Length: 172
Image (cartoon, rainbow, N blue to C red; front, side, top):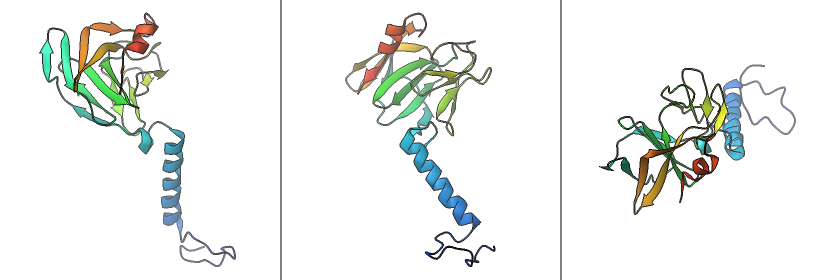
């Protein structure tokens, strides 16, 4: 059947005129289904990732503006990833807990990944798979007005202090 030959369509009509249109509709349908199901990498999970630095520093306390939308700010200087995700704010160590390799953001998959051994993490730092055995390490955080204060001397490891790790977040 050629792209415009509708002779084999059912009697109710053929709403899709060819392969390109079919693939276009299929891609839209798949993206919508992924978003509805909350699948990482869907438009509902897309995070804006940018680089930045602390607004203020006082010893081991670094302050950042509260993000206005879901996304992440990577502060290379202090090796902090500040994430706003589903109305919560987290501050993570930039390195993978397995062997301290800098984590990468994979936008098309909606997750963090270690480039060395492929450990994968959700945007909230929860471990998905790979050689690591725990979630991304979280710094203690608290809110100070319109800023998030990250305490660099207070790092929680999910396997050593599950309660501290779970509490190292700000609810918005």
